[in-house]
Length: 495
View (spheres, rainbow, N blue to C red):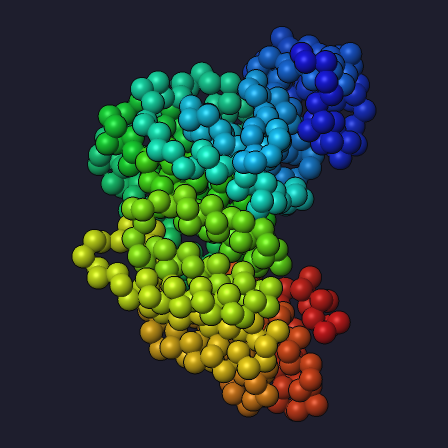
């Protein structure tokens, strides 16, 4: 007990709308359901947790996490409730003491525990049909400030791996319990192959259909990390965890679960660093930056990209650094900084062509090929065209290159190419060509579960308004409204 109010618990308690007595009764009931019938709490204890910062003993923090997760319809962890026994203050470079978002960076021995708890809560939301949204995103500046010094060090894998009796090892009733056990190289190879299958599915169909499977697999890997394996296997297992966490984050972003996605990207960065793979950690943070640009927060994206670029380290391959620069360029374009965008894209092109391919790229970079380079350039120029209409011509050129080069089974990326191209054509006052490519995007979207494609489609829909007097474009507008989910159709009606 520190005598200070637990502001995190207090804020969530206020959102939940319970009385203190009601929460006490719910804790007792839930604890009994989780196999702890002897637990008995009361209103005065709840008051001490909230008003005096008392941290109750296990299993109460886990019980509270389950209750708040169910009540709020989004993942709530013991970290979110401020019920973890560790220091929360950190140093911001050149600044005073600040509270880090979600207590990051975590101590090495806590990464597997945080991973397991968060995925367990996420699976519970999936199974019970809850929404899984509603939290606030941490600002990019807060994340980058909290993680800067930590990411720039290379930890050795600790000899004392997390223990299965760690208080954050989730095994309450209602969550998927995975019995951790030592594994060998064959099992890790199978896990690595499963990552490739999930990654291919995501690229083809979007994140909606396989997200739960990826989260479940990540939850199992968290259990495996509770055992100490030989260093070479432990590093590979951390690599699997990082890859799955990035996929879970990307799929969550793809279906609009933005705070959940951000948490997975941070988990991925932690897992990659624990495995000694700084480039992977940088790439994970770049995903969080892409998310920020998509959500209209390019300043936050640039903060994260500075950390991703520097944190990736010298061992990052030229192609990896090229990919990072394309995201930075997109953020500049969102702010109308044409000169900075063109300079950054130039760096990306130079790095891409300088990669001789003599070092095989890691599995997580194999999706970034020449088609993706042109696709990101098309997106950056199309975004800049909102500020400089002349950029639409370059956007068209790069989008056509991307479409020409795009590999099979990259359906979602192809949809984005078509939307970028159609949008650029509208801006360039070429409605005939815009109509053609917009319809190709609509045809491709039928089997895709990506909410991000709907967001981009809504952006394109707004560009059709000035051509609504054209019968062909008016028909297109109706088809777009029909293709969007019901909730999104109402937003298009105002455009």
